[in-house]
Length: 237
Image (cartoon, helix red, strand yellow):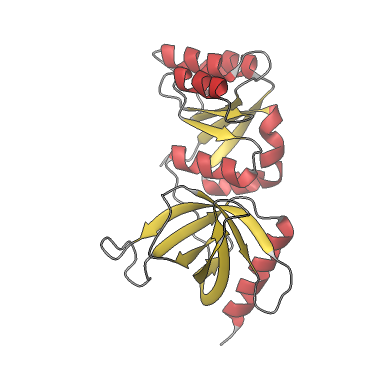
């Protein structure tokens, strides 16, 4: 894997990465910030990024127009483009599909969502987080109203594994709620199904049927609470 993977983003997306510049380097890529879609196009010949992330309605040049130009250029067409859209408006989606972008991310955005998309498209593996085995009651569902109870089998700062024989589809977004043992603060966040373990095709034979979740929108205080709990459990004999 090359050591100089480069992700070009427009300045309006910088706030989602700003606190994690060092984290980006640890993940295996560097950020190049441009002012708008037009500057992105003007610098592509010189910077040769591995990925471009831009808003559909970026200033200077809309994201779909930038994507079309990249796809038409024989020297640039290998560069994937991720477009950000405000809503699931059919017209916006149609613009993205016609531009043949690599992925579409819906607002509101989060740094976890952007990081996950960058890792996936660049072919970077998910980070290896310290995991602890445990039995923890979790509520999860497609939204905050339709929820079901499950059991968390292991937990890490990046996600958890939930036991279930009826897994939702891969990459399905879920709302997840749980309490860490000995605490009263409800941790609630969005999570994506990163992998599925089934009886017929087990990815990990040491785990029961279920799904591996990746946290996408953890509050900083909740993330720190999970890290403290994992550290405490790891220090116990």
